[in-house]
Amino acid sequence: MAGPIAEPSERSSNHPPVLSIHGLRKSFGSRHALQGVSFDLKAGERLAFLGPNGAGKTTLIRCLCGRCTPDAGTIQLLDRPIDDLGVRQAIGLVPQEIAIYPDLTTRENLTVFAKFHGLRRDALVQRVDWALRWTGLQDRASELVGGFSGGMKRRVNLACGVMHSPQVLLLDEPTVGVDPQSREKIFTMLDQLNQQGTSILLTTHHLDEAESRSDRIVIMDQGQVVADGTIGDLVRKSVGPSRMVKLRLDRPLEQAISLLPDDDGWSNNDGECVATVGQREIRLRIGDVAQQLPELLRRVKECGYDIADVEVHAPSLHHVFLHLTGRELRE
Ligand SMILES: Nc1ncnc2c1ncn2[C@@H]1O[C@H](COP(=O)(O)OP(=O)(O)OP(=O)(O)O)[C@@H](O)[C@H]1O
Ligand SMILES: [Mg+2]
Image 1 (spheres, rainbow, N blue to C red):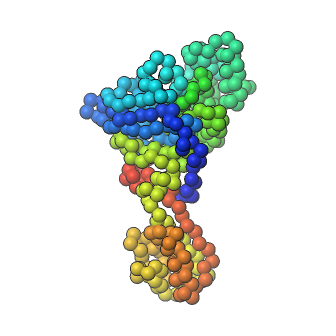
Image 2 (spheres, rainbow, N blue to C red; image 1 turned 30 degrees about the horizontal axis):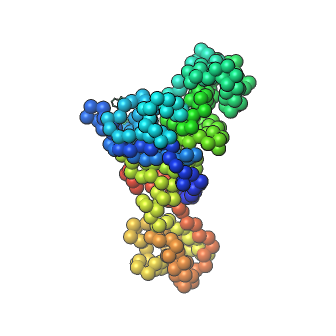
Image 3 (cartoon, helix red, strand yellow; image 1 turned 30 degrees about the vertical axis):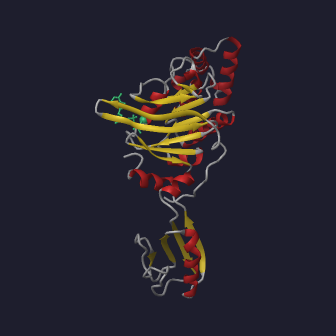
């Protein structure tokens, strides 16, 4: 599946880190879930954390929010060790499993979580009202959440994690099992928080989400960070400048033609050139699109064909992921 490279926003690239993780290790018996994980989350950033099943994503999130004690490594939050008194209050957590009370109403759930986080009186009432507006559930405020749809429960779950206005929000697969419309709503809600200054780290198995809804991507595999950068960075460092090119000719190919200076007219090094006599379409991978595309077009014209259309397929995050991990996201 080829998709466009969307260069994510550079807006947060120069900001200081709100969260710095260095050399984090965690083993469960002989299973090494985290094997020296290091990365930063910058202020105002939306960071997507990707990795195959068992890569260590949930273990990492659990270490960050104090549900699991790392064996080694450091975690700094807002320039202070995360274990310092009160520091962790700057973190909000939205766990993968929906963790709300089905026998309470939306308003009651929000109130309980706000109280857990120390909100009282006017501040509490105002925050609950805000959360009802933010989730779009004002008209369902007095209904028991047990009867809600999956997408609505997810929204309540999300709101419960941010009642204390955390500066850093951690979300473990916030859209797993969610229909596309609810996914969209959840990302709109996250973008609103982000615009108000919340830094966001989320794990996801949806490559399209990571590609379009984050500023930076960290890919983990077998407890280690294997890539860290914008989608543009990752493509450059892994797949490189090669691109799949599709040419549509004015008429069917009459005979084999030599397409690039060093090829025999039929296939490139990857054997990916498809140019069949009798067909109007030629597909091939070229090693350096900026250098070689003009040459390719010139040769086709030299052979007496006009070019009706040219498509250049940029590698997607899917290509990068496969290249780096050798595996699909879900196996
Ligand atoms: N409490 C635990 N006890 C034993 N092993 C554990 C525990 N928690 C995690 N692991 C192991 O650590 C490894 C990493 O698991 P983790 O849940 O962090 O992966 P993940 O990247 O979140 O995977 P998924 O994409 O499936 O959610 C796995 O091999 C898992 O079996
Ligand atoms: Mg997980």
